[in-house]
Each structure stands twice: as C-alpha cells, then as structure tokens.
Length: 414
Image (cartoon, rainbow, N blue to C red):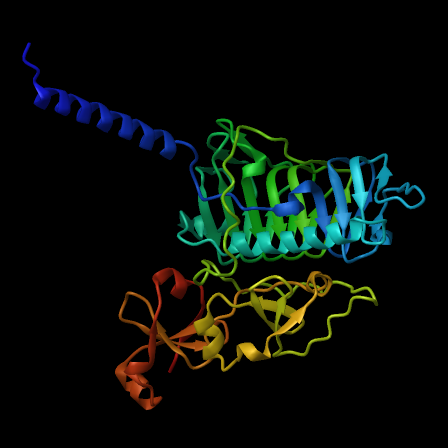
C-alpha cells in the first residue's frame, strides 16, 4: 500500500492548528478586564485602617478587622474582649477577629505588613495604564452597565442610581477615582453574569461615602476615609489609609468564587507613569505612636528595608519614583537614600508618583509641547512663546500619551 505522507502531514498540521486555536481561545476566555490587584495580607481583612474603626448601632461584620499604627483604643463601639496575653480580641459584632499593634506577637509585625500591603495595593491600582474608558459619564455612572475593564476619572464619582457590573466569575474591574466616591441612599451596585465582589477594586483618592441603606460590591482601596451611612451594606473590603466609620452596617468579606489566576505582584513602582496620576486631597496624617516616629524632613529620599522602591518626602507623605530617570532629573543622588523601617513606613501615607521637575519640556505623540509646573502640564501655544521663554527643542522629553495624560491640565503658558 502506498502511503501519501504529504496528505498525512497536511492533516496533522490542520489538527495542530485547530488545537492551537482552541488553546488560545480558552486562554483568552479565562478572564476579561485587567489583571487582579494583589492585596497581599491586607486581603485577610474585611476592614483595615490606619487611624481607627468606629461603629454605632447594630453592626454585623463577617471577617477580621484591624488597625495599625493606631492602638486598640481606636477600635470603638465594638465592646472588645481581649484574653490576657492574647494576639487578638473578639466582639459580638464581628464574626472574626480584631487585631491591633499592642496585642501579643505575632500581631504587631503582621499588622505592619498588612498596612504596607494595603498601601502597595493602592499604588498598584491607581498605577494601572491603558484604561478602557476615561471620565465616563463625567463622573456620574448611575444607570450604567459596565463590562470588565479599567475605568479612570480625574474627578469624583457619584452613583445616584443603580449601576450594574456584568461579567463572569473570573472577570476583573478596576476603578481609578481621583477624588471622592459617593453613592446615594438606597442605590445598589449590582453584579450580574457571575461577577464576584472580590474581583472588583475601587481605588479612591478622596473619601468614600456609602449612602443610607445602599448596597455596594467590591474592595474599596481608599487613600483617605471610608464612611458607611446608616444601614449601608458592603459586600467586599473597606481598606482605608485613615479611618473607617460604621453605623448599623453589614460588611461581608468576599468568599472565594470561581478560581482566579492571581499574577505575580504588579511591579510597583517599576512602571512608567501610571494613568491616571491625580490631584488628590492631602489625607489627614495618621497618628504615630511615640515609639514609631517618622521625622524625616521634606526633600529627604528614603526606601524601606528590603525594598528597591525610593520615595521623596513631601509634606509628610511619601511619593514614589517610577523611574531612575525622573529621580536623577530632580538632581537627587542614590547615595543620599536613607533606609527606614517597615514601622516607620506604615506610620505615613503614600501619595501620587513623582513627575519630572518644574521647567521640564514634555510632549506626547501630538505636536504640542508642554512645560511641567508642579504636577501639571502647561501647553506652549506657539513658537513665539517657546522662543520668548528661551526654551530649547533639544531638551524635550518624549512621553507616551498615557504618561502625558498622567499630568494635570495646567492650561496654556503665555
């Protein structure tokens, strides 16, 4: 019998092609939206805050709560019970445990790590680039149905009527909100198609306020405070870099849904300029225990022991550098970087990522050239203005459009 090797080869190639396409399709269909935000050990908490957690009325929390560097006395309204030498306390309002840095080992070290992980997760979330949509609804997303993706606003966001997040159990949503997040009374963030609260991340620069009897889904990563008004329900986590305030609320930490592939922790801040980098309100400085003082002057450059991230001290906050080029452009030297402890790091807030220094010329893919002024960019309208200012074309730093968009709009330079 004569064997036609050419036909066999063609048939095998066709079968291989179909198998490859099927594999590619299954990988693509695994999850929609951006990669997950790695919460680290902060994900072990239903509520985590730096300066305090308070409650009034009949509150019910399913999951653990914790504060640091604030003491256990900042957990108010819970009627805590702490066994002698205990590493955690309990409360009739909490179906879980309550942790504070003054408790027995290993709680103090664990709380410091959890706070650091929370801050790292916030920087990660606001640093994601290539958004699905920007300034959607001019900040009003009531009545919308949103697919998995990355959404950003340079302003605040309001939810005056129900909003629906439609996707599968493995899909991811990240919302980058520069200012405040506010939901109206009785509104709902609705999940459809199997969407999971644990896969939703609200990264908020200003205060988050959940309206009376509203129902909210997702992890709130807030650089400021989180306030739940009377009767509001949160299916997710409240992770605040200042305080969390409760009033007869229900908070349920997300339970595992369909398997989700968590990526290697997102590189922070070894990324290009995040989009967006917003003008955010200066958060209220967290109280610092006498034994953990952060007394570095403005202009100091520091890093945490065991980490390569470098920060500039600005008005009591730490602002990370995204690239060594920006660091050196500001006339700083790596030899001046001081190493701080993880306790000192946990005692201060992390602000927006540093940009190029004042006077730097930048441009994106368009022809317009901008002058950096603080955290904003000012457009140069003509060559006449360019020449009058004595600027040089050879000193223009070319950025990607996403990098350029990370600067606030400073108007026109006259």
